[in-house]
Amino acid sequence: MGFLSASTSFTRYRIIGEIPETLWPEIPDRLKKNAFQDIDHTSEERSFGWVCFDEMLDSQWRTAPPEKGEFMTFSLRLDTRRISAAVMKKHYTLALNDEMERVEKEGKKFVSRDRKRELKDQTKIRLMARSLPIPAVFDVVWNVRSNVIYLASTQGKLCSLFEDQFTLTFDLHLEPLTPYYQALQLLGESRQQQLDDVEPTLFV
Amino acid sequence: MEDAYLGQATDIVLGQDFLTWLWYKSEAKGGHFATPDGETFAMYMEQRISVQGGEGDAKETTSVSGLMSELKEAKAGLALGKKVSKAQIKIELDSDVWQTTLKAEDFSQTSFKTPKVEFKQEEGDDPDASFLEKMYLVERGMAFLDAVYFEFLKLRFSEGWDEERKKVRSWLNKNGQDD
Image (tube, rainbow over all chains, first blue to last red; front, side, top):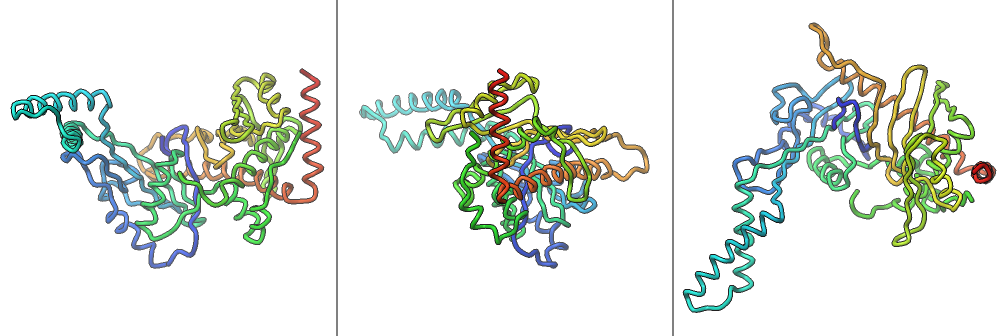
């Protein structure tokens, strides 16, 4: 659920290092260069990239620009094709049975391991092409004054994907505001040693 | 954030110490706090709390939900040396209420709710007005959390922490006697 929902789950980041002034006017173009590519008509397993904050079908920002007041807004869209294990098993068995019939006619008694792997891969591709990718969208809000960034997700894998895509797009590095990093920010880097040496408090 | 990272062990120590201390502050001290600008607000833990103890395979978690008075099991866990690993937190300022579930190990926020924002648009309204109001409220809520965490950090790394630790212990012991 995004930031416009009544209830949101999110992770907070800050940008490490200086942001070059030249970056700001480039943001819309950089977003477009790393925009989401549709995979509906392919058999790709997944695709991800940026889309317009206001409209997940818009990867050209025709609906609205990313700027909203003091924020840069966009969303990370991730489409994934999933094939249920049961469906995969059934179609692989069918393919294997056909193959067995074929090799028996040739007088052989078994299907080689390499051929089995090949059949599995072919089955997967065939099923992928027949299944529709499931879309998911995660809001990103970047406060350009404080350079704090909010990602509407708390899932580890998605957070990693976002961090990589953000760095790839803007050439900037993110630091999640976890207790440690936030303590470094609030107390100052000079207290790092003290933080690194911290031991759990024994309350009882 | 998937793989092990620098500061991961410290994250858990600080996050759990913070939430455990916050429970004590919210229950024994009424949860009164102030921002660096002097704005006063209430922050307290309620209804859903998880406590965790041990490490690796021996890790044990107790999750309880209920009214404050019924969180005895979680409190019993604290008395055994467990720490708060996740908690539902409420922030109140006048009639405005924020609510979130904060995870100790990474400070991720789940089910973060701000005071209500009207999303109905009227002609001539700025189309981004509701979004901007919503983000203002999200950042305001986070600023309250940050202020309380900062207060904790200053205390945690001061000579006064030992004294505070004893106060938390006597609060826990007192609760044990009440049961």
